[in-house]
Image (cartoon, rainbow, N blue to C red; front, side, top):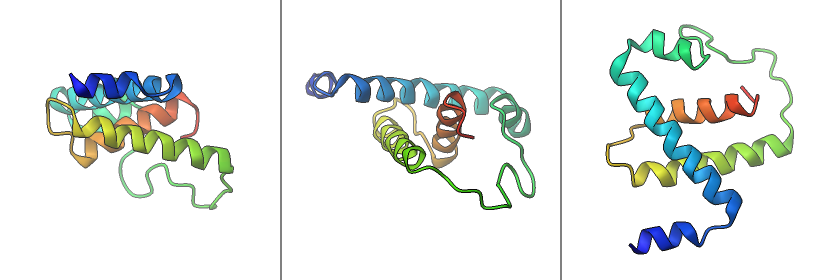
Length: 106
């Protein structure tokens, strides 16, 4: 019950991002459980193999995007600690990719 009050005490934006992280982790878990890895990655819009989605040109990143990615990473880390399943790093990375793609940053 105390955890619920702590979540409700968060500012609205943080509460929303935390809820989104919980949903993204659940989606990542379901995709990895139901589909082969390559198919799951394809569904969330990421490529596998050498190079992946990396930008070989080393393009510049806006500081707002870095701050947003930090907020998303913290929300995913916080949500992963309290999920009813063990949200391993692969699921966390996929959840982050889902959240970043929603914002058109990946």
